[in-house]
Length: 150
Image (cartoon, rainbow, N blue to C red; front, side):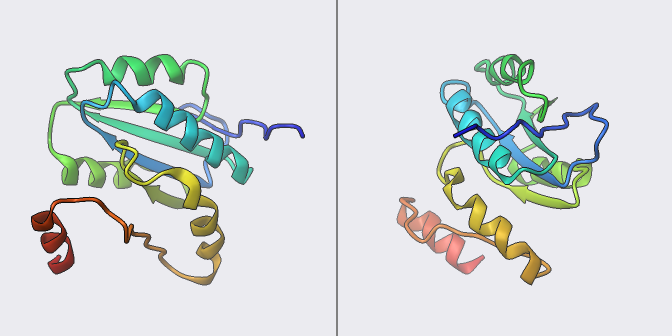
């Protein structure tokens, strides 16, 4: 079987991306390479022009260096570095700057892997918005309560 061709368009790509994936990151240097490779494989398999925009929110552990090194060989991977602003403002910036017709957001901590992307992508044609969530989250009770109320 031939692996799918990389259809990433990067920040200077000639094609406008169909899919923009927004991924905020903060001090994920140890594991982000494997996380990004897994997401890039799944996004590539969709066969559409894309950009995976990683927003490094002021990491001090080398996260940006890891992403930048990987981006040299991955045309669809875009690194955006900023001083620390927090998760919410970082995600909102990603939404504003995303160039794709469709925007997907996931976090960089590997809490939710890329396995469900194909199902989310397929559902997009039947809805204006598709939201996914984890029902097996291993968070402390206080965090689960806050998430349930929010």
